[in-house]
Length: 122
Image (cartoon, rainbow, N blue to C red; front, side, top):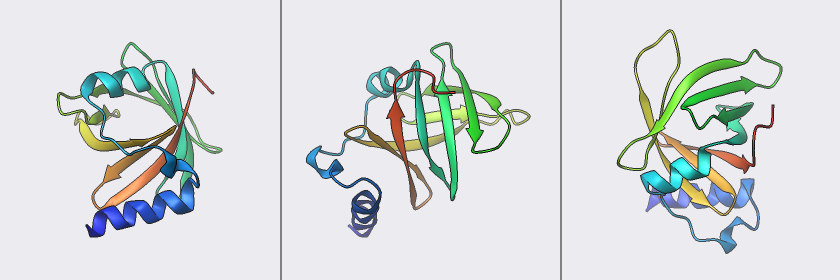
């Protein structure tokens, strides 16, 4: 219950009005369709970023003012977003909650908000 309260507080602070939509954890198919060919704009650990999810499984990530990096992405059978960023070959997966046009990545006990953007935005 405490984690939900933390998420709820984050939603109110980050996305006023998002409460009109019910939060849900997408299925593998739903999340794949949501990300494929689209972008996210968000904040990860205090750093604004843009990320694009190519339908072929390539993802491109860029922090504001930074270099673009390229990795791979997929959605596992549990509906978790997974990515690998060279030089590492280790896939890391994140639970995702969707509310309206916002997506919240869960890493440990933290939720990181992002707004879904149609197409490639950078």
